[in-house]
Image (cartoon, rainbow, N blue to C red):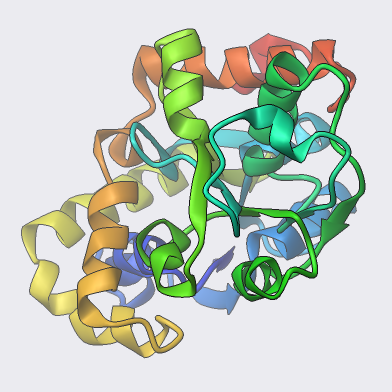
Length: 276
């Protein structure tokens, strides 16, 4: 079985047992480590392996060809992207008409940012610049952009750049909807045996929780020089009960995010029944 996911600690922790052949009856797995922005476009272009991690924001483009699996992804509370500035600002209007760096224009982080901005900055922001997420905080620090939308471990490290949080988009989303935040989804081609794949992935999650020490070396090997402490914070934040099963709250959150985004013209319209 071919699968693509990122080198981030939550993905390597989640899929370690499956990749290493520790799940009974699961096939040999060939992994491609790819940034989620890359897999988003692979899925949209019907390229890539039969199982991939993509952003929930990319789902409306791919649901005709791929099925959303109810396990293995990243969805939760207290794990939203942040809007950062060099100055200590508290008013969203401070970035009205300004240049904002974002890691992708087809990501949950971007959808949350646009939905928040449409509510809090009715006259709109200015230019949107897409850049690799690890370059955003240095760009804000140097004044090359006025604000940055950051994800992943930047939640834990932005203070080291002397930056300030204008908005935690997860806090805004949860206060506005009462729902968790859909971040990364696991999809499988509709021609694949999705029930078996779901079973293997859920078993891999269970194994990771039961034997966290077994995956430690694998996680750190792919952690992009992240410290052990930050990698563990990353896992604790993004691997939770929704990783094992989306449940009703998970599906409600996905419908709410993508429904709002569709209403705003940020994603194509889609049939909600295709989410299951």
